[in-house]
Length: 513
Image (tube, rainbow, N blue to C red; front, side, top):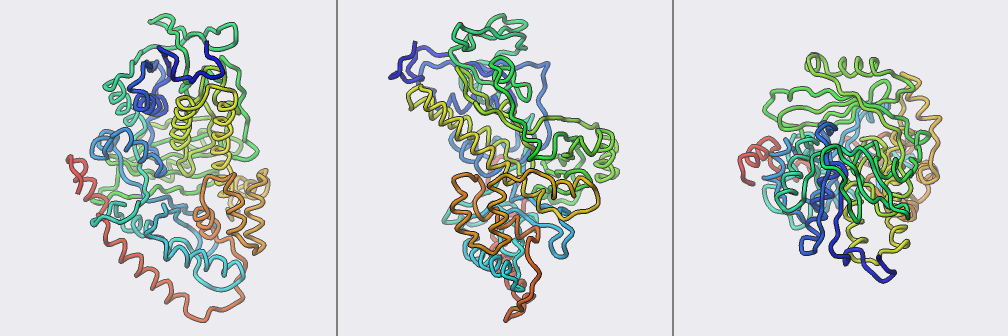
């Protein structure tokens, strides 16, 4: 039995059972194996062939690069195995109807952008004071230019600083790559279906019963069973806190299409607004991943499928549609008793901004850190749960503002999301400060204790969706000439980056330029 002074990782031997594979289960298993490879800790993944993973195209934030570096997964190895491409950011066409603001690009910021980003912040604040100055984010960030020119985020000449970028990948293929790596490195895989769970007298999970391998006991369990929440929600009865009043969407339909045969591969995710939600377009090496995220309050499965097929045209005619449903929200106690939930079992909002893999990575790494170095106490469990909830709620706030800022009037869906969503207190403070002309940087500095996204992202969304008063103060110079100067400055920097398709061809051939 563990005492107040005993560290969890000092219990010898220790068995940790992860229920569920896929990206969440196998990324967690690999991170645990890497951290504890010199300890007497057995890691077991129980996954069922009868319960498949969702193999749609997915995107990432830049954080996953750190995990892959620690795991020693070079891009030339894991990317070809996952049909992966590079991601410079996300564009958002058709969310607004405002002239000159019909689309904007959410970039990955780096020191490469520092000089022009400072000008962007200044011009946003002048524009908030009714000055007629250029304040659209697409003009100021190099990654926006890279996406426009279908360039990769890989420079021809090394940069003297870290340059952020993300990836697109096939979720099922990445899960398979992580599984193969994990088993090669010592993780034990059990292919079976969990059919029951038994508890200890103190309420902890004692074992899971499987169809073919019988009972599998462990000292600790990780719930990666997906939206079912087999351990954390069912067995331990941790309720899901519904966020439907904050987040409108609860459904999606995914349909893959071939890549356009242009000899070029896009390096951006496109999140295009439609009548009752938005469509993602994610370029993989061999195909385009597409999916329509919508609200079942406004559209049926048939309505949504018909709308996305119309959007995709003849390219989507012959492809099967995969329908998905969820309740937006999260649980409060992600680590409860001798179980931690990682992945969809923690909850789910929606894939706008591609933050789910970051939640998985953060949860796994934070749990490993707490479990390994801190005393196994209620206090460190509470800190872990608080940190994960802050992450998810910060993502919720940023996603919600997309809907509040929309200016579409073509359907009740968009009008209701603009006017009737329950705005969180944090979003209300941010939006009020922006609209009132208050010192926005001061508000963002205060909000950083609650928010995941930094001020650059908030500036880009608010400015990119045209949240400005009418201009009444004329500039001294010519806005058109200033935009030409910005375009020249960004294009000069972008020329130092490889064409996306060229670099991918080299990478898939087994080398890096």
